[in-house]
Image 1: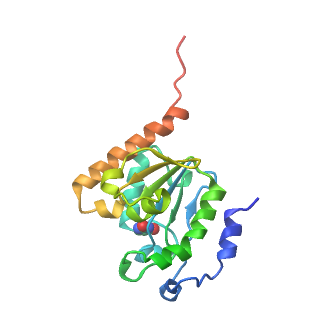
Image 2: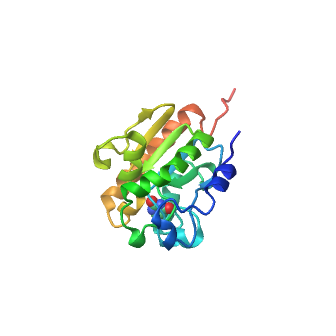
Image 3: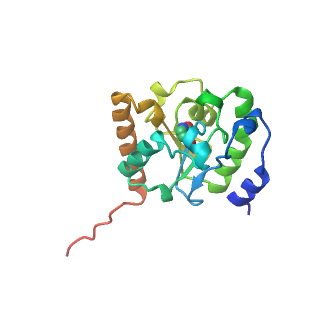
Length: 193
Ligand code: URA
């Protein structure tokens, strides 16, 4: 049985696309290998590149708040990105970079085999759902691809200066929490006799 560490070891000092030249750290992913929910972002920003961990900057702070709304802790979930190395100046991922990097993400998904894939933003949503539809029309919908339930969401970074997107993200995470609770309630209250 392959483990996440096997995947990381095989990735090694990856030079499959030019982004390796600018990186401080390759940002592989973090969290629970048995997670029910896996979050997929876009790519590391400055703080993530420096610390080697996804979503540790401003977007990560907001993600932590959103996880709390869904009744999740960071250690319950797995968090990875479409790209494992920081694009210069946080520009959009290029098609060649996505093609070079996403085989590793596919392997991570296969190993973790979560129930839910939550795609954060357009790049992750397009990759997972193979769709050209934008996140504005898809966010908060419950979809399926293969064995996975997929919930596309706005990218938390896009909401930092946009109160209406913040509210929509909070609504979508509340919905995710309710879906998770349907199967395994957060607080099982014993009936009084
Ligand atoms: N934005 C992302 O998409 N991923 C990160 O890890 C941080 C910010």
